[in-house]
Amino acid sequence: MKLSKKNNKINKFKKFLIKYKDNLKFSTIKDFKISMKKKWYIKVKKWDIKNIKDLKMAFIDNFDGDISHLDVSKVKDMSFAFRDSCFNQDISKWNTSNVTNMKGTFQISEFNQDISEWDVSKVKDMSYMFWLSHFNQDISKWNTSNVTNMYGMFFKSKFNQDISKWDVSKVKNISLIFSYSKFNQNISNWNVSNVKNMYATFYLSDFNQDISKWDVSNVESFEGAFASSLFNKNISLWNVSKGKNFNWMFFNSIFNQDISKWDVSNAKKMYAMFCFSKFDGDISKWNISNCLDLRYMFMNTSKLNKSVLEWNFNKKS
Image (tube, one colour):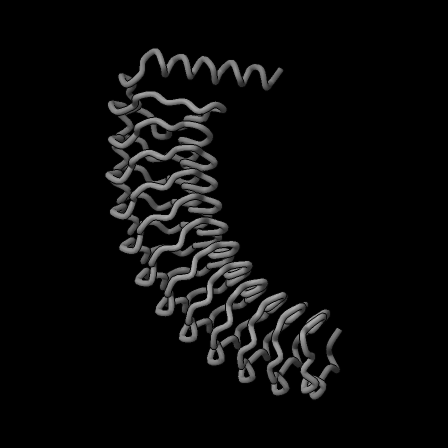
């Protein structure tokens, strides 16, 4: 019964839109949402949404109309605007200068158009933005200087473009950002000094670029950072002294570089850290006195480095 009522409302709304087509005006409302179960297309060029501030989930599902001329200059929230949609039209001229939230904007969408000139200078949240999306366009000139959250931004997406000059100095979370992705571009100069969470950052990714100079001194979680990835570059000078969680960091990875001088004295968890990996480096000098979980740390590794027998296991579980 509830589903039937909902479908009736949707059908009535759809008929209303088709009847009045491009003469609709929404100048007095503050938010906007269209959601249909079947792909549909209508002309909306003259729609007046100039006062709308919220486009959250506005065009989800199967809307694919021409909205290139909509005035979105007052919009602040574009979260999940095109989530799970087939929308793939030109919106390159949109004025996004007031948007602060782009969380999941194109998540699981077919969108793959030019948005290189979008003004994203006020955006703080880009988490999930291109999660599982088809997007693979140039956004190298985006001003990301105010972004604090990039969690899962390119997770399992087709994106593989130059973003080397992005300012990520305020970003605190890059968990899953390139996980499952084809991304393999130069980001060696990224300032990640404020990042605290690198959970599964490159998990199952193709990434294998130089990030030796990354400042990871504030990272507390490296859990799964390079698990099952193709990464095998020098990160010997990384300052991981604030790291507490190293669970499955190199699980099932090909990583086999020198990390003998890492300060892991604050580590609490190293569960399956090198499990099923190719790692065979000397880590005999590691101070693991505060670590509480070493289970499966070297399970099924190619070679178990015997030097770990020098470790002090008195407090370990």
